[in-house]
Image (cartoon, rainbow, N blue to C red; front, top):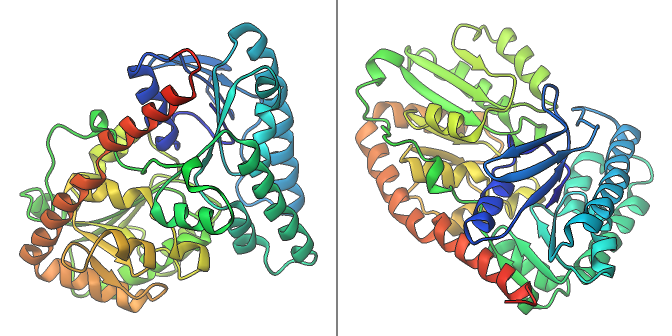
Length: 392
């Protein structure tokens, strides 16, 4: 596996797939980025992790982003080529973004390996969200669309995160038989042994706990959560907001917390936590929030945390976006108008005021989640690997 990111912290999907492959008898190597304090090579739950000497820098401009992504791709391509001579890979699984990271699979593909291209997000849409107002965007975006098309053709098989992306890929010309959907659901081994939701006895001790975990970037709308929290303090005096993660909007979130006088109510971890640890902390929350903004890309995105909150039985307040509504109904989650801190504040007030109704929705969401559970996707992923193995 090759990914432009750290492993395993912050990459739950990659770790889930790696564990599924290991359980099925595959040997798994991962080539990933480096985080401060991590060794260059480490065995993590049976996965041989090779970390390259490059770390992600949040908030960089276009030149810095290009240098980082191209630099990592060059290093990963060289590293995979060297490892291929020793390991003789059957399958190379490349995770986007960027799409041009598929170049890392070139040498093993020439030598007979199959290539899986895992589309976590559509790179052209991500690029448009971040750099759409910059000069020269049109040319760069056309180039990225071309790279995406070449990557999907080069790959032996395509894996993606849900049916809306599958349909979009088919509309872009990818044959349906080439696509496998592997949802970003929760590996059951990571789920805390016990959980409690909004009706928990711990509410009296810890207050009304509103949680968000994951990347903190402008398009995920975390500032909205801070602004909504400021509005409901008079109505929910025991309010506590917990945000676990990191990202280029973290400084803005910190500043907004200070401006609104919420420093005693908002906890910012300032870093990504290992998935078992963050799930443990989230499991007893009063409500989990998904505050994605109404960007075009977000209409077809399903945040991993949506499945995690549902599996944990945590009441959910989520932006009303197309792909989310396709997977959960208003009987299972509390929708609010995407991009509106006022509507989010109303949703949080309602959940705090009517915990029994919130608990009923959470229970319904947990039942709906059963059809999305990880064992189904894990089996689908392993079946794909087995089909790609010429010796099976």
